[in-house]
Amino acid sequence: MNRRSSYFILTCIGFGFAFLYIPILSMVVFSFNASKLVTVWDSANSPTLKWYYALLGNEEILDAAWISLKVAVINASGSVILGTLAGFGLARFSQFRGRFTLNAMTTAPLVMPEVITGLSLLLLFVALEQLIGWPAGRGITTMTIAHMTFSMAYVTVIVNSRLATFDTALEEAAMDLGARPVKVFFVITLPIIFPAVLSGWLLAFTLSWDDLVISSFTSGPGSSTLPMVVFSKVRLGVSPEINVLATLTLGVVSAMIVGVSLWMARRARLDAAAAQ
Amino acid sequence: MGRLQRLGITGRGLVVALPYLWLLLFFVVPFVIVLKISFSDIDLAIPPYKPLIEWMGKNSLAIKVNFNNYAFLFTDSLYLHAFANSIKVAFLSTLMCLIVGYPMAYGIARARPAVRNVLLLLVILPFWTSLLLRVYAWIGLLKANGVINNVLMSLGIIHEPLTMLYTPFAMYVGIVYSYLPFLILPLYANLEKMDWQLLEAAEDLGCRPWQAFYKITLPLSRNGILAGSMLVFIPAVGEFVIPALLGGPNALMIGRVLWDEFFANRAWPVASAVAILLLILLVPFMMWYQSVQARETAGAR
Image: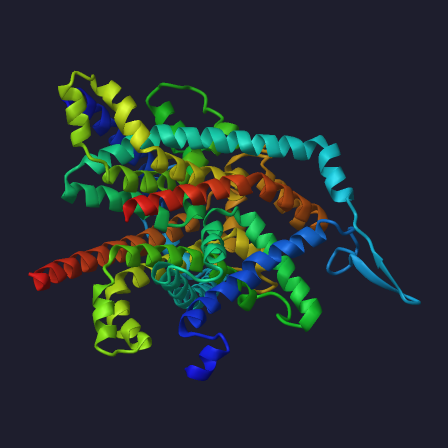
């Protein structure tokens, strides 16, 4: 690149990242603000941890976080199983009946507006309840099923693209040596694609933990998730406790992402060293 | 295995059967039910709609298909207006995402590998933090005594706070902000595979940089642009959270109309009809997205 265009690109990147990060950083800064006005800095009493203590004593938020955690963990584990199966099937079986449909069904949830997915799943649950009496009412079960349906699509994409980039030679060699397909999968394939499966689990967890729209449609009385509680608070305006929640979320997510990428980089280096 | 295989059940079949049946039951069948309910009458019951098929006794079965919900959507200008406005907002937001995101994706793709990984991580990080909380951050920035107004007033640039929150401006900022990573990532994945020697060759042959960009980079990144734009446009048309939090009471977006019909009015059949129309509108784009994705993966292999 010549100098003028590289300055242009640098400026764009600078502005772009400022745009992405100023809102996030402002939440972090104002989470330490003593004033209840949130965005008006009270320099006499700040920085303070008072809203952190307030959040830890807020039972409504803690109860909702507990429900969200349960749904997110079950969802992530379930969607990893379903998504890995689907991703493996799509990547390794070149021809089977229903391949086109499976491919379409795992791509569509990625772009489907959430209001449509939420409404349609709720209507399904209501119809099923009328028909066979299950699921009885809405709550954690229906929410988890709904979350798994869209999360598994993301896991499928991640696993599928990971499998597409790695050579089938190892798997074929194992089969030639007489290993059964199931054994090949658990001994050869799964360890190799493990980083993709782990990313899939984390992504499925996050998608569920964050989801507002689909949860609102499919939850029942007494099963409000954290985003549902946050949404009802935020509709009334800014609140210092939400800033604290955002800061804590950001801290956990950054630690997780940085940790996982360091681990993956180390693994890639070890693999490269082993290959030599 | 032998006996199972004769029945047509194979190991391979079992692997794909589970996700296949799951998606069939929880992704495809629900749409059939939405379609069915969009043709039912509203009822003051639980659930709030009348059955389509009713056993009348005396060996007669009544099937009532009711087009009133659709007729209602086309006669009340609010709905058509909301549809048109959603498409407009989604289209303009996609365009703005492209203007902001293309140079970023390009710059990341051309950076040194070590820098590139850090920048990529920085694009992905907001994507992993809650959308709701990131939209909430803009309320704090944009409101009358918010951060932007406070900074501008303390610098003496303005004397009265600007009204930004609950305006179309706030809604556009929110959508572009939330969906930007969805555009940058596929575009980056595409640009990363680009052969930059083509640009050098063009410049050696006397092409000016912007000409080379227009004639080489832009056409070659077409699939990345399309995939990224689709990932922004399609969900943005049905977006609910951002117009509800930043857009103010007049922000007519179809996702919000559907939500209100369902939760506030308990008009499940009308909400279903809105969902079906929205789906009909978006399915061509979804198919387009899928064919672009198929081309990209075919090209990568």
